[in-house]
Length: 77
Image (tube, rainbow, N blue to C red):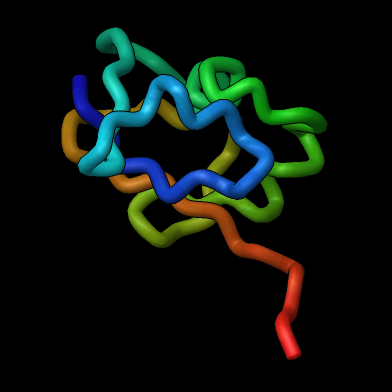
């Protein structure tokens, strides 16, 4: 299945195509996506991740066309 991912800058972006999508097997969870992106501190990051713009648990099943994004705590200025 194809998932749109707005990944944080420290993620492994090699699995995301030029259109911002990545392929995951059917039945994949948010935790599986975190593992694929090699995100550190998965349990801490879940507080800052969203599926279809809603906070989600690591056990959340992903579906074709979902959008996964991350809230950044870094501010510019």
